[in-house]
Length: 490
Image 1 (cartoon, helix red, strand yellow):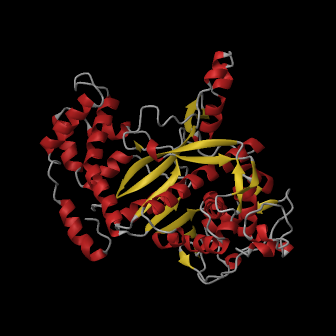
Image 2 (cartoon, helix red, strand yellow):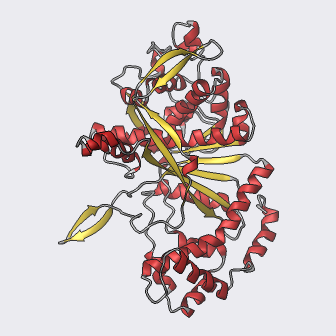
Image 3 (cartoon, one colour):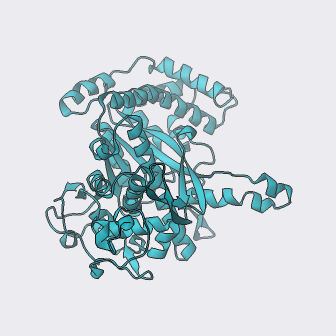
C-alpha cells in the first residue's frame, strides 16, 4: 500500500527493510542470468561489461515494477490529487546505485555479482549519466521527485527526453573541447516507451473563425506544422518506501517521418526533412541561442513539453469522468523556473478553444491549478521579494525574455492568450473594444491593452516571461499567496 503520512511510513519502512520474496541472493542471480540470456542474448562467458550492466539494470527494474504498478493503482482507487512538476531539466544522476540503496538490496546484489565473478562497482560505473539536466535547476527537480516519492506524495514529473545532453568535456592536446553527449547510445534500461499515449502539438500557422456544431463561432487554429510527442516513463522510487512515482519525458517525432513520393522522385533529403525538423525539438538540452534560430528552437522546446504535459493531464482527468471546472481539485501543477511559463497561455487555449470552457472559468481553473517556484518573501509583493537564485533567474536572466513575434510563431492565438494572462486575467473585454466575439475569447486581433504600462505591447520589445506565471498562479515559490497578489508590471 502507498503510505502518505509519517506514522504509517514507519511500518512501511519496516516492511521494506526485510528483503521481499524473490530478492534473495540466489533469486537475484537467477533473474540476472535470465535477463542476460533473454534480453541481451548473451551467455555469461560471452557477455561484455555493458551486457552485464543492462542485465543487472533490468533485474533491479523488475523489482520496481510491482511497486510501480501498485502505486498507480492505489492513486487511481483513492482518487488522489496529483502534483505535476514541469521542468526543462531533471538531473537525476545514474539510476542503478540509487535504486539499489532505495530498495535496500545493495549488499545482496554485491554478493550475487561476486558469486558470478563480477564487480558491482564496475557495473555501476558503466551506466551513462542521463543527459537530462545541467546544474542546480535540474538537481532541484530531481530531488523534489525523490522527496515526494519518499514521503508518499502522489506526483509525476514532466520534461523532455533529450537525445543528447548539453555536451561532454574532453581534454585534447592540453585543451578542453566540447563533444556530443551520446548518453543513449548504448540504450536506457530504466525507461518504458508509451507510444499509445502520444499527443499532437501544433506549431505556427494562423487562426480563423468557424461555426461549430451548436452554431457558435469559435476560433480554429490552422497550424503550419504538427509534431508528435511520445512519452517515455521512468520509475522514481522513494527511500525505504513502497511508493514509486513516475518521471514522464516527451520525445518529439514527425507525424509522417518519411515522404515516399519525394523519395521516389529523387528528393532524398526532402523525403526526411519533416523528420529532421520535428526531432530537432528534443535533440539537445539548451541549444545555443545567440542566433534567432536558437532562440526559436528553445521556445519550441518549452512549448512542446508544456503542451504535451497539459494535454496528458487533461486527458487523464477526462478519462476519470470529471468535469474540467474541477481540474484544479485533482491536479496541482508546479512550474520549475520560467521554461514552462508559456503553459499559462496554453492551458487557457486548451480549455477555451479545445474544450469550450468559458473564459472566466478557464482563468479561475488556471490560476488555482498552477504554482511557480521559487522565491523568498512570503506575503510581500513579487517585485519586493528577496533575491535568491530563482528570483534572479526569473527577473534578470536573458533566457527569461522572448520577443512577442516569437510567441506568435508558436501561434497567434497564444500571443493573444499570453497578452491577456499578462494583464492579470482581466476580462477579455477590458483588453479591447468589448465586441462580443472578443469578449467570449473567440477572436484574435492585436488590440491596445489597458493600462498601456501593464505590458511591453510593442511587438519589437521583449516580454518578461517571469511575469506570466506569477500573474497566473495561486502561489509563488510553493507559498500560498493572496488571490489578487500584486505582481510586477513592466
